[in-house]
Image (cartoon, rainbow, N blue to C red):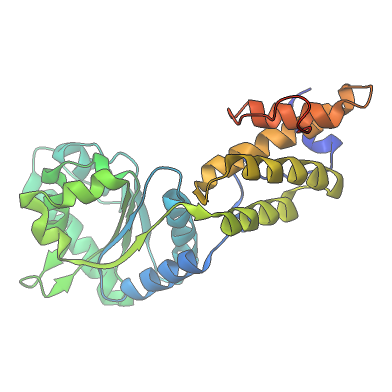
Length: 289
């Protein structure tokens, strides 16, 4: 049975633990709300913002929420750099495509001038700086980051023509310590450091996901199993991506449980969810999963 039929069978709007959740199903924490508000203020003046954290701690979700919040505002132009590892020539080509500026690869100065004129025109008409979002920014080269800093700066560094949000893991912080990037690091005006979530935060994430996507029966079965999974993990902190994995395995088990007769469905659910994640089970005789 395919995923679409399973969702229909259980009356689900979507898989609540899929990375492709609709924006209104995302959990907006107080910290994400705060960074979205700060970037909203930043587009009036321009400059750099930084979202950093280890893999799975919610950087990309924060960036997605910022993008959708800002795109909904009047006069805010939001662009996304999708190939951060590009060298300078392709970097300019992508910027030209994002901001609808025709550039000649052989004329770097012409591209530099054309982009800045486009941004100046937008600022003059709206008094809002365009917004450029870069996920996986640790993949950018020092040369391209330096080019971006100079490209977005005007009037002897008194004016920022662009608002840039960089998001990346710990390697981005290391990259910004590069000698050539010290000037960029000093220009970062707002920061968000994502961290491993506490157990209470993970439970809040589970409850939010279930409330937005699941029927009550699936909620009860998957929540019970995932709750035991969290207890078995025994971590004071964990990644939201990990707990989504726990609960997604639990959801799959609940869906399949009716296929296992003889009163063993619940046991199958627990083992399917926990063994699939490498969580040790209690020895037989010390309690069931």
